[in-house]
Structure formats: C-alpha cells, structure tokens
Image (cartoon, rainbow, N blue to C red; front, side):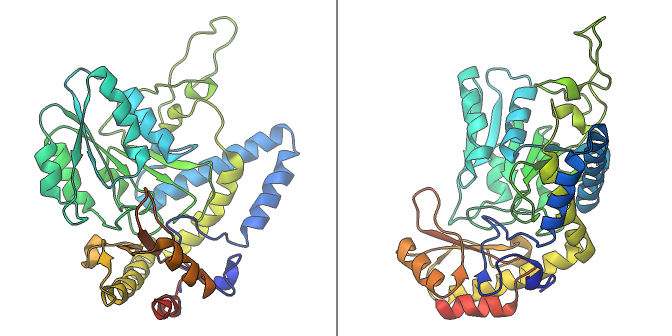
Length: 369
C-alpha cells in the first residue's frame, strides 16, 4: 500500500475495493472540517481564508494535472462541466457531437438535449466492450464540434490513450472534452491534451461530493465565454453607477457564477496533499499492478471480462459480468469484501484498486470468488 489503511476511516476489517463508486475518508479530514468550522466564525477574515484555500487547491490540482493553476476552477459536479460546455458553444443545425455507448449519462444527456436544435449525436459502439480510436475516428467529420469521452471508463475500466486521442481530435478541429473522473488521482494525467477536462472529486481524488475539477485549456479556447454568470464571473464588481457592466475574469474562475463549495475544498486540499506526497506516477504503477492481479484472477473464473488486459489500457478499475449480481454482492459482503455492483440494469461488477489497497486485499477478493 502507498498510504496505510489506519489513516482512513472504516478500513480496519474490510477489503475496500470500490473507490470507483465512493472512496473511504482520510481520518485527517476531521481536522480540516474543524478548521473550516473555526474559520467560518471569523467574519470577514473567514472569506479571506476560504479564498486562500481555494487558491491553494487550484494550484495543487494544477500540479497534479501538469497545467497552470489559472486554468483550473471548481464546479459543483462533473455534470455541471459538461452542461457548461454544451451551453457555451454556439450551435448550428447539422453540427455533431461524438460520444461512446458505454459512457456515463452525464457525458451523454447534455448532448442529447441539443438534438432539439438540430445537433446530431453520433454514438461510437463498443466491440466486445472495447472502444478503438479507429471507431472514434470513423464518426468524426468536418461538422464535428465536440468529442466527449472518459479517459478511464466507469463501466468497462478501459483506459484510452490520451495523447493519441488528442492528436486525432485536433486534426479535425473538433473540441476534446475529457471526463477524468476515473483517472485523476488514479493515474498520471496530462490535462493539456484535452481542451476541457473535468473530474469528480469523491472517488480517486479522496474528496467529497459538491466539488468537481474543471480545466480550461486557454491556449486552445481563449475566447470561451461563461454561459451562466453571477457576481464571481466578473474581474471587478460592478457598482450602482453601472450595474450591468462586467468583464469576465481572465482565468477559469470566470466559469463559476458564485462561491464554490468552500467546505469541500478544505477536504480536497488535504486529499491532494496526500496524493501529491505519494506522486501520481507511483499511484499509477501501484493501481495498474493491483488491477492486473484482479484481472488475472477473474479471468480464471471464465466470467465475461470487460477490461482490457494490456497495462496501458487499464487504470484502477476491473469490470466483469456475473450471472447473479445480488447474490454475488451479498456473498462478498459477508466475507468483508466491498466492490461496486451493477449499473443500467446489467450484472456488471467493478473492482477498484487504489493507494490504500494491498495484494492481500486482492487475494482476499479472489479467495472469495
């Protein structure tokens, strides 16, 4: 393990293999919550401390993703990020968006809503649960405005080659929107290969709900304007003399109309401190190694594996189908093994390995099979 289990809440007796759904909480998050509550009582000084925490979180997130802190902001959810982009762009009938069929609904439904405006949604179909770059390329043409994919699939565990995907999409002048919810914190992510990258924080980033990372590639999209505005949008607050005047901030904070969820940023900063101390490259090597052990063990059962075998095409998730998901989950839970169950009415199991997991956790899971 890269961080000892006893630094987390609730891992004393279980093999927690479901970070892809919810991660356990660091015990030290208690201290950060206490600090927030103490700071909240300080009046105007409270706001200064909140904003200082926000600024540190932006830079630490940027360090993790190898980008500038000015290009990072925090929305309330990854779903908000997809909707923001969908509303920020100007659409014409006949434009199209490319998605994949094994994608999370948040990366699908905002585009589906645009069909009422004459926008075509093109769906890349998996082949035996696998999405190839060739299949994505086949759906892109001169009218493609956005390609929206997850870097690591929540449903199959497949990891896409971000650099090659970026080169493909940019060669067509489309915009690459990457959902890194199952990648950030699990593997090393070079966010600048995306035009927009977003991630939930309550899984591999060891945070909580209410905050999501939003990366804006200003070099690629310098003129992207916020579709939703509020007092925080403007570089300076307008006064009563000219209340309708505003100039958007030059950095990514232009995309948040009001205050972010400061309490969740206190927790996220603590989580980022732990993740950065270990290092994304070390976490990636650890997670890919353990997920390989999981995959090899599941392969021996003969069940329908969904996750690719190649290390470069995996991260922390291994997914497979079982005949009876309710019975499977109940039997694992009875033996102290926690995994994540089905989604979308199918019998898919997802096993997720992260920095607090060990080979013993994997062995315990495989023994329970």
